[in-house]
Length: 261
Length: 288
Image 1 (spheres, rainbow over the protein chains, first blue to last red):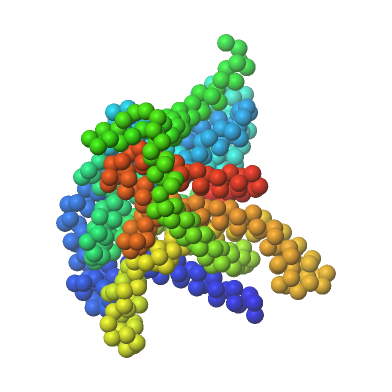
Image 2 (cartoon, rainbow over the protein chains, first blue to last red; image 1 turned 90 degrees about the horizontal axis):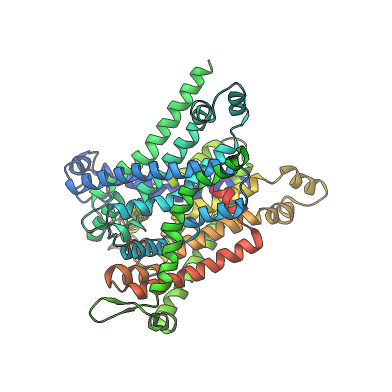
C-alpha cells in the first residue's frame, strides 16, 4: 500500500516537472491567433513567423557562435587541468580542485558583477569578448567535473604499453590517450555548450546593447506579453537541447550495438 | 633538466591555463569589487577612487536593503523545504524501483537540458489570465471572469521549485543509491516495521544527500533575479534584483559592488558552514 502511494506521489512530481513544458509545445502548434487556450487547430504558422523574424535569427546566431567558442575554450582548459589532477600526484590537489570549482560556488550574479567591473577597469567594455570570458569561467567547473569523472575510468595500461613498445610520450598521447579521451572531451563540450546556450543571469550583465542571445531575446519578448511566437521559440529550443542529444545518444547506442555484432 | 624535474613540472603546465583563467576572471575581480565598494559615485556620474564608507553604510543600515535580504532568505528557505518535501519521496521511489530506473533517471535529467527561461515562462501559459487553469475554471463555470493568479510571491516560489526540484531529487537519489538495501531488511527481520526501518536506518544515512540538495536549492534560489522579474510583481524583488538595478539601471557601481559582496558573504557563510560539517564530497558526487 505504502509503495503504491509513493509511486502515485512520484508520478505527480514528474507531472509537475513536465506538464508546463508540454503545454508550451502544445500551444506552439495552436492555430488560434492569441496563442492561448482553447486549441483551435493544428498549425505551423508560428514557426513560419519565427523563421521570418530577423531579431530571433540573429539571437540564434549569437547563441550558437558563443556556445561553440565557449565549449572549445572551456573544454581545452578543462581537459588539460583534469589530466593533471587525475594522472599526476599534484601536491595540494584538493586545494586546486576547490579553486577550479569555485566559479560555481560563487553566486552567478556576484561573479557577473565582479567580472564586468574588473574588465571594464582594464578598458574592456561590454562586448562579445567579455560575454565569452564570462561563459568560459562559469562553464569551466562543470567541464572539469564531467571530464574528471570520465578520466578516472580510463586505465593507464594502454598508454604504458605504447610507451614500453617505443612510442614517444607525444605519440602515445595523440594515438592512444586522446582517442580514449574522446568521449570525455565530447561530453565536456556538449555540457559547456548547453550551459552557455541556456545562460541568462550572467549574460544580461555582460552583453553589449543591441546584442541578444536566445534566452535574453525570449526575456525581452516576455516584457510585452506572452505571444504564441515565444512558445514556438521554446519548442525549437527544447528540440535543439533535448531532441538532438537524445537522437545522438540513440544513434551512438545503435552503432555500438552493430559494432558489437 | 632531469626526467624527474620534468615529471614534476608537467602537471603545473597542464593546470596553468585553467588556474590563470580562474585567477584572472574570478579571484582578482572579486578582490577588485571589494576595493570598488569603497569608492564613491559622484554627482557627475564618475566614480571617485578612495576609501569611503558611504556605500557600506547605506547597504548595511538602510532598512530597505535589510528587509529585501530577509525576504530573499525566506523565499529561499520555503523553496528549499518545498523541494525536499516533493523531492525526497520521488528520489526514494527511483532508487528502490526495479523496473524503469534508467527511464526515470533519464526523465529526471531532461529538465537540466530545457532552458531555464522557458521553464520559468511556461507557468504563464498555465496560470496567466488566458492560461490553462483559467480556461478550465471558466468552462466549468466556477468563475465568470479570468482570475489573475500570477505575479506574486507564491508564483515566484513555484517557479523556483520547478527549476530547482531536479537538483534535490538527484542529490537525494545519489545518497540513497549508496545505501545497502539489506540494512533495511535486517532492521525489519529484527522486528521493526517498514516505516521504523526507514526512519531509523535509511533516512539518517541519506541526510548528507538531502543536505547537499538543500544547499544547492537554497544558494541558487537566493541568488536569482530572473524568476522574480518573470513571475513576480513589482514588490517581489529579491536581493539579486537590487544588485542588477544598481549595476545595470542606475550605473551605481560602487553601491552595486557592496550589495554583491553582502550577498556573497551571506551565501558564502552558508557554504562554509556546510563544508565544515559535511565536506564537499557529497555535493561533487551529485553534480558529477
